[in-house]
Image (tube, rainbow, N blue to C red; front, side, top):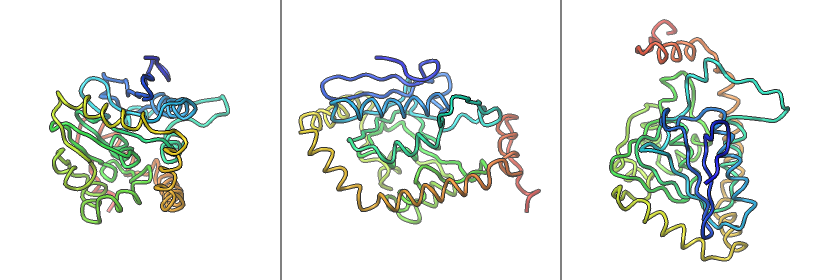
Amino acid sequence: MGGIGGEDAVLYAERDGVATVTLNRPSKKNAFNAAQYDGVRKALDLADESSVRAVVIKGADGAFSAGADITEWANPPVFDDGEEHGFVPFALRLASFEKPLIASVDGVAVGIGVTMLFHCDFVLATPESRFRTPFVSLGVLPEAGSSLLGLRLLGRQDAMNLLVRGAWLSAEEASAAGLVWKVVGRDRLEAEVNAIASDFAALPLRQLRIAKQLLMQSESDLLSAALEREMAAGASIAGSPENREAISAFLEKRKADFSQFD
């Protein structure tokens, strides 16, 4: 299994027609920094260019992903190579990926660790898994196409509960809402995921791609528009007083006070 991104933030391996992408920042509960965003994007590029039929995405050491690494928000990296890095190219690549994506979730999934699941064709989770998107409480907004896909997948009330209210969902609640396809015991998760991936690995690649394209086509234009709206709205509030207060509160380990902005 090879590393991709700075400090091997993502691990990539291919076997028997299946690629495995492992979010590999266990000390941060696999929270996304620029290296991990870039690593997943590059891993999907590798899988797209190879003969693998399906991709499994999982997290290292008992967590799927704790979301964005907020410590990097305070000191964002600067790149001078003329290429795009970080969240935006990652989100666009995820939305356009044309092979089956299977998420294997064990432990916390927060923020982008949840919204990336909307782009997966199967999401399996252990009973110990928990899900949350604390966007508004951090002074930011729903992202990665979740303003469209969350509403379509979950329905209005569950989408509001998860994406705006920021409530925690148990694995069973996430399954009932439609975010998780199947809840399986931790001792069976790998086998269940591998069984699905193996079914795809036995299919003809060209027809598999076209079949997923057909399924995605009805919402691809809508998704592109949703991503553009989200990115424009996100840019308009990035660095806002509310956003700065939320980041300061997180770093200072206190509750954010938004009453001063009423």
